[in-house]
Length: 332
Image (cartoon, rainbow, N blue to C red):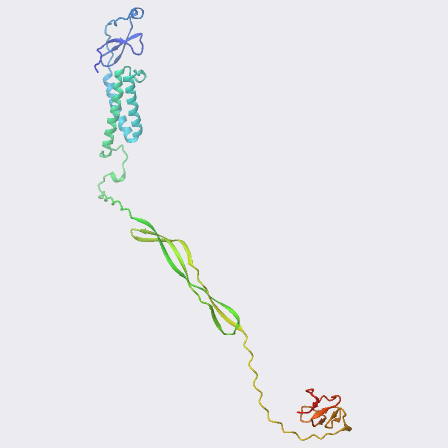
């Protein structure tokens, strides 16, 4: 886009005065607008003698903008890349607004073509950021930058050890394993009154049970490193062994058979000494003397009088001679 030639033009900030356009930008020189232009028809601006141009600072200003944009782009790219992106976007938006809508005198953009300045600032920010990013990896540290001990060369420094290789990830898996374990039975006893003492009998045979144990197994690189019990389930319960022990008392031993005794030798007849001069009328078939006590001859009695049987009881057995009560005394 070609720029208008240098001339006086209505001031975009104050329509009541004129401002000198030097062919590239607005200058600081102003002049009052002709009075006839405000009351009569619109006329071409009356050429006034060109004022002596003020000392131009445009060159220094442009150099300052370029240098500042490059430095700002480098600093933001290194320490605040997000802020740099927002600054670039803001510069592009301002440039488009000035070029397409209207100037922005508050930002120093007094004409639409000055929007190119904002685009230039955005481009310089991008350029400064790119230069800083490219120099980050290869720039040598300066005295003003922080340095680490490893990067400061010394005369006695030893060769830097090679970086250890990145360890290869070790495959780790979790597996499930089961194991069947026998559950031993218990042996118990019980008393049985129907069995003799010292006698035992197996009532219930013992049977082992079965338990299933589930494990969580950790395997690292194919080698088991840990095993944890998850559950224990008794699949078959054990059957306890029961043994009966006899508690019955043994029967008493039978009494030995009596040994036949030899027939006693009859003792010599004990003379019967009747007392009172007669026989007791309660007995017959033999004379039972009348005494304080009478016993059968050959028996265990101790007298004092004895009678040789058999004697038949005909009255009262006052001497208790008939022990078996059959009516015949001293018959054995």
